[in-house]
Image 1 (cartoon, rainbow, N blue to C red):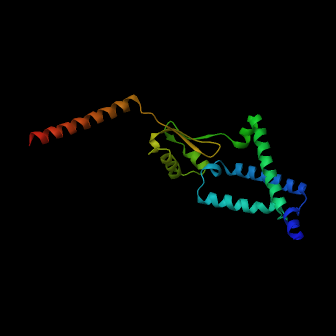
Image 2 (image 1 turned 180 degrees about the vertical axis):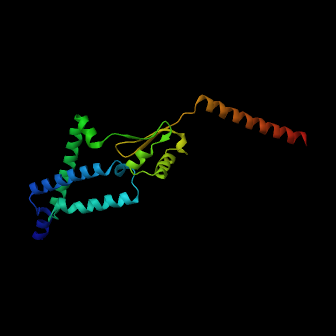
Image 3 (image 1 turned 90 degrees about the vertical axis):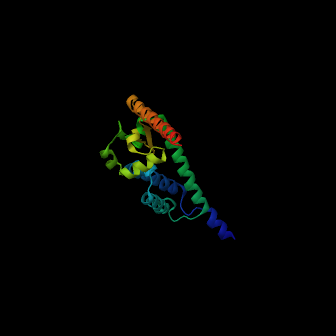
Length: 192
């Protein structure tokens, strides 16, 4: 019984070493995900998901080392949470550094025109862009004035407002359809 409690509660690695390991992996992952691009953060496809899941399993041993105690695991998790909180607070107070780390939003569609260079740079296919637009209620990319890849990896779409001419055209078509229906009704009533 003594051995069980010892295995559970006594860390197998000094806490300072565990702190250094955890912070090193945290910084490595921040840098790695930043270099991987914004897509990894918000537009996951099955391949991206597999990589992220495997990545977490791969770095687990780097964080815990030869320690599989409960105390060591909880301590590593606490160090991660504290480091993340401290980083967020620091970056909140230093917006320039935050922009350098997180990057800037990037236009993928501007003025209704798809920017293929930006899609290529972010490894986003036109089909993925169309799918994301449909999820936001936009049927075709022609209906989009602007689309931005945010630093979080999310795609935000600004729908294109119809021009006054397009509105007038749609109204005329609707009136013509109504007249056609009315004429068809009259023709049906006159023939009866």
